[in-house]
Length: 217
Image (cartoon, rainbow, N blue to C red; front, side):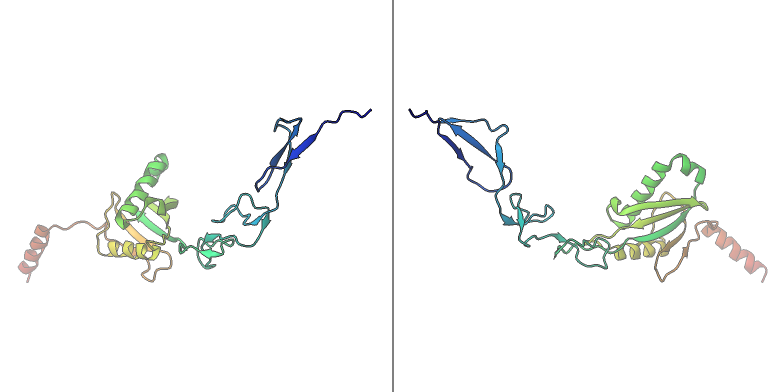
């Protein structure tokens, strides 16, 4: 007498990728996917998640990954993994020292406000995003702000620092602080010392001095 047999069938799902569940069917009753065996299909493609053509189902890298970024080793944001330049390379930030009239102890008590106001004023004068201005250090000597101006591919840092020096030299720099001196790292201009602390002489005083001079001639 032949024993009864149960027909067991297992269908591997159609598709591609990783961890595909294979659910067994017994006597035309489908089993639960919970705890089911998993299959991984072999598929060639880009396996780098940082690539623009990343294939989440790929299991074998085919060397086709396209990773965008700055490919110029001399630039600030050089990406050693990039194999396709995105045209967004940035120059290194420029460090600037600006001495302004102020109370260092008051700065220490209101550090966040001072630095926020300072960054906002620099960005407004130069017409750049405030995120590109970073206060690195503030020291005594009135108040000496040491800060970085970062590059932007659409608005180069060299243009910004040239504008900064020009505004100070032409007395067009607008600030709630009294600017005493400015020095831009790597600039051939050198330190710019303003005459902000010199007493203001009115036109009437100049005329009076002229008359006194003539009286003694």
